[in-house]
Length: 540
Image 1 (spheres, rainbow, N blue to C red):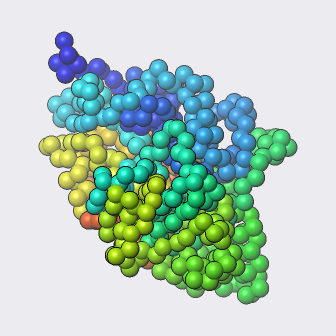
Image 2 (tube, rainbow, N blue to C red; image 1 turned 120 degrees about the vertical axis):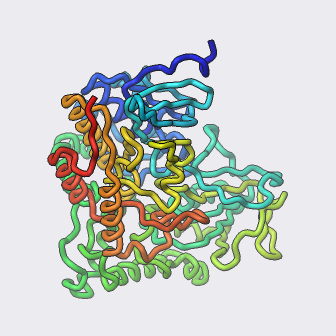
Image 3 (cartoon, one colour; image 1 turned 90 degrees about the vertical axis):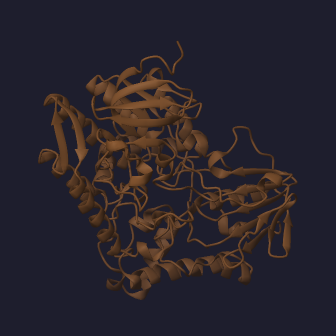
């Protein structure tokens, strides 16, 4: 009998995605609740975003010792990070270690894409089908597809005619790409383009970077971790984890609790300089208390960045092109780099502004802008992702009365707490739209979500409940709250992927929750304490 004809395999839960979210969800549901769980991933290995993003210079922009799981003290003590900001291979090695150490692989099905997931209102179960026709039936559908996993490749005319090699940073090949002696074009200067530029420049005969929007980028100040540094972290892990959970963005540090206006001009510059020398996200989340709410404060910081760019980049015309003026600092994902601005001082690197003259077409020899053709051996597209919603909408997900998630989200994503979508019972979205997600240190946000989902399912089992669904009025109220929180800040002033501005035709909606992890966690806990207020629960 074929897999299409066979009865579906019965499970308690189906999890989509084998990255940070999926691995932890599998561990919690199987280890603590004894559930029959199956994880599916289209990749042929675990790791999620760290499986796919193998581009040159790919590195985490949160520090290694807290960009990690906190659920196992033994794991914390045994794992040795090599540097402050780990590169992609090391993070992937860590996630593979987690999969092996906790015997997770036996419930993970790789090289398998979920084609459709349809909620059966009679049985209150999700009917799930893979791309090769396998069928599964599960009470719960849990998505851990990642906020930045659906690659965005603009529909460039003529791409199929290009005679050289081309790559997208989000789908990089496993084997190394040889840039030696090659003419390389790199399209995009978001986080991935900024990380890739200096590394490619070291090998390429010539690198031409095409920039639509300049970004504020901060030096990472990466360094190898000493044995003494490792020992100190491990001795203080409980305190470090406490600080991450009690901070606004999941980092073990806090802002000054003062506005820039409470400092003298000299003190303002001194604080900015000290944060610049430290590097990392501390400049965003550990500086002035009103950095993201006060234009006056933000202008002080933004002008500090602009001055630094002018100091680093030798050519004034190039420095001017690299200097952001159209958005406040931090309202786009703030990249962290190693030698990005310095790369433009190399003789073999040039910058082309495409803000007013976009790429017209890819040609057999390269790409064309107006009457100018640029010839390349390799083109790298660092054009980002269809963030927050793209990966979910690639799956045919249907809730009650046959409603598709694509139809539900046609006017922008709607969700209650970023955890559930009204009309889609028993489906949980880990770090979904409407949760802090991409504005945080992701493992902290992921663990909070998975812990909440696990406790919710335990509550349902204890009380003989078979179905939980977000109420429409609760969803509407939460979406309004998310938007109001964003409007209180400077975030809406930027055309960022936070609002889907990088995807033509995507409804402009601010997707992450900006009020921070403390406020968010408090609200989630209150909902649970009040008997899952805002959800409709049904008994057997």
